[in-house]
Length: 251
Image (cartoon, rainbow, N blue to C red; front, side, top):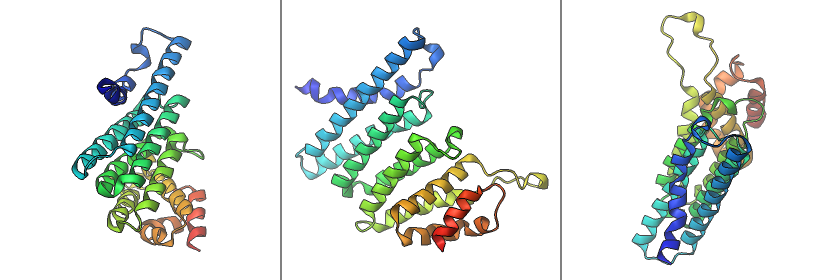
């Protein structure tokens, strides 16, 4: 019984190392390799769900619960980090695992998250930005992982808004601050109009989606002043679709 209790934890803990193994390093190839990868990811997804449910059903005292909360959230978010940067991130099984991990994080946050909300938001911010750095997320469709991290962020913001407003506001503003960053090109004026890095464009997209999904004017009022000037001026590096979405929302 003791071994069974910790087996899900060990399975999820093994995921980051597993996902670092590249295709060329496997003895198997083709369909056999894909089957092995999918099986491992599916098993880890089930293990993460078991661990999350175990936490939600646990009946521990205050200190023990907080420790278990921190450990479980770290476990789930470490695995999610590994999914985002993995060679295998485009596999449906990896996308589904990522979505399931974030769903577990949201469940823990909504059920027990008052005790660790500030720590959770710091980790979530890092995961959001990591997702936004992936070059293959840019375009009209940012992909399943981008959608999952956007939804999870909205769910946690909704939960925490009236419970502990300060860390929620800091989380949103910290994300918004990334779109103001510009590479310092020194005297190379010809490069001043170089395209905004992918991470900034994706953060703009994410914040626009969050504002539309949350339908909270307070969120827009926090974000909009940080970059509305560049959007209104039609910065060539900022897609017109995003400018229109923001300006329509502002109106």
